[in-house]
Length: 446
Ligand code: PHE
Image (cartoon, protein in one colour):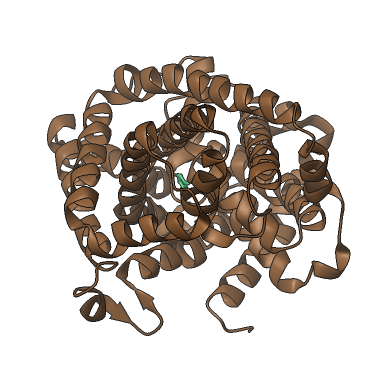
């Protein structure tokens, strides 16, 4: 089968596009806030380096050696005597599940781009009200923008790795960086910038507990797009002799840089114009618009640009969430790209409607089980269970299952002195951390 190959810069931007998503700009700042800023950021940086970076290389290696879709790569690489490992490709499913709510959230962002053009909420209470009424009562608006997201994503995936995914990332990623960079420079000129710096980097160790540690590991995973075949599927389209370590470094570096830049910028604005950082998940949809309001017309411009950047981050992640299953159906069942893209698109679109309805008054009750509605269950099940499980499988697969010669023949020359460290991390540090994350997040430890 012939696959269109990424250019080097195309691969790095596409993989970074996958990694830089709602996780960086929406989630990272608010969990950093919740777990006390500085100390949490340090723990997070350490996990990115020790665990995230090694798994990123391992995932790239499986794709690069397998050269096929995620499911087939596992099947072909698994040694005959270790038959069960060929099911490692189950993780490709996670992306479509994540997409069911991710697309709905991108829809909210589209809606905020349009509404921020004319009005911003004058107070946090008003912002809360606006967000709440969209979320709980407004089916029409949410459905409309969810549909726009579905069409956009399906269109790009249908154009393929080169003409769709690479092309979109080559345009949107630089634009995202320019928007965030520009807003960051403005934030640097405000007096509260130093407060934001303090908040992000001054460690308050007393706020760090086992839970913060687990959240840091879990987030490192989600934000780097690991454990669901996205990076693996992209890596199957790498040129031969690509340097996986350098590629992985760039992706991890850009992802981390953008999370920190976004965090510093948001906290500066919230200190300067709003009510300070600790505002929970509503940070970008509630506290931030109210802070932008205080800036007058400049606030509208910033709000629109900010939500555009957030939409770009979400869209470039989305295509990587859909592509693994699209590749699978093309590769294994001989489907045309059009048929595969539309089918996978409809899958997340239709189930996404259930996720959307599960926030709506009147539907909510029949779509809630235990303490979570459908939307939150999918989020929880994928992030807390599937991604870490995918990570565990990959670490053990590369660390123990693949013949050592096969791994070292590619990695030894690229990692040089760090090769034994990488292997050690995959065999011992990462698996233990993954098991802890899964256990604690599903509540066994708590
Ligand atoms: N990394 C993306 C984010 O930070 C989410 C994502 C997870 C994308 C897994 C692809 C795969 O939002």
